[in-house]
Length: 362
Image (cartoon, rainbow, N blue to C red):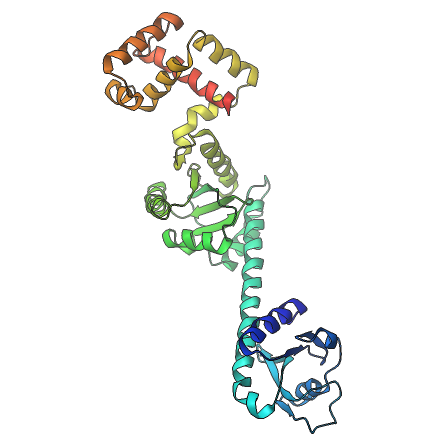
């Protein structure tokens, strides 16, 4: 646990606070970090005595038996009830002995903190690998169940995956995990990372209603803290083998929903997902044929009409035009395309064309 990197950080932090030279020796008495770089890799005999006896060694300027050792105090560094090294503070022992124990305690705390972070990082990588295995076609149920138990997460149906895109490059993994754990119980949630800006959450043993309700609170938290995030939620599945389908659906919900939408479920974009299976040539042919001759202004009018569920009043308001102007535009669309946006079947045809055009633009 006492690496050269950790030792160098301990020396740097303690010297700033004490204005004293600090040496860190490993479990063989070799100096691995020091305020005096010339002493690195030397054997500190005072430290070897500490390691042999397990007790602090004080060296005064009159002691000559300790080679490569300056006056000061040398104390054992303990980790999990074992001595893993020695910390030496250079100076008059009478002046520095009183705060030597404090320096030792701070050193041991920093080592424990580093160990804890390493453990968290290892655990997170194991969770990421577990989720990756769940996306494979062949899954060993007994092995998967044991790994979930290791993380104290219940492997209970139903299962549902959400993918979150956070446009915050400096977002720390621990910060994100703490956000999620505010709203979702640890025992029902596997959290991990797909890349720099994407995270996954596997929900287990929760109904879709419970998940959506919790996401409503999560979204309020995101908005209140002015964070940038978008969420796609896949469908609810009953078996471990179908988790991969929920994951793919969550990706579709994220990519096919409007950029302005913070939260989208697969149900919201299911029709677009089916259209997305078409070839690019088929998509282009359909929307260019249906929308042929329409200006950008009239296409924008259609987009607003469908976004407002065919409500003319709300559509006119969103476009900042009079209702009569909207009705004129809709008549114009019918004249050009042959499809009446106010008739159900024609509206479906136009809506499909708008979706396909949007997919092509993206």
